[in-house]
Image (tube, rainbow, N blue to C red; front, side, top):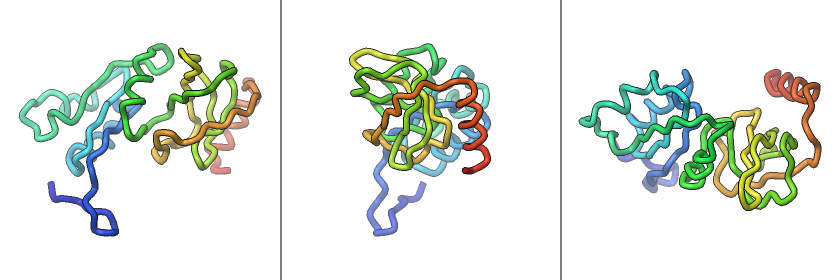
Length: 169
């Protein structure tokens, strides 16, 4: 793997990425690209690993120590929060936010500098919440802001958000 550089000529430093949905079609292809073309480490999270088994099994692969699979159901497993906190970048539809005192289940939130639409799906310890984001999260970074709307989602609101996101509005 050739040393890759930023536009300013400085080398790209390896980072750790929590890839939520790594066992799916898009996630598995992203994992393949990351392993073959970058020095980054991946925490691959999903309930299935069939599509990435070839990346995990052969210990002779040059990336054997850079990818770890965790079988986690993102809606019901508190281990996800620890992985997200260990990562430099999160790719997938879920983020964890701290300092969300008074937050409510199913509260709509705005995530990151682009104000992505999300919904609180799990209340954790010490004002920590898990948020399902309804837009592409690959650009989110650790410590990006999360703004509470203090509005609870409803089936109708969810449908409107879903249609808005997938129509590109």
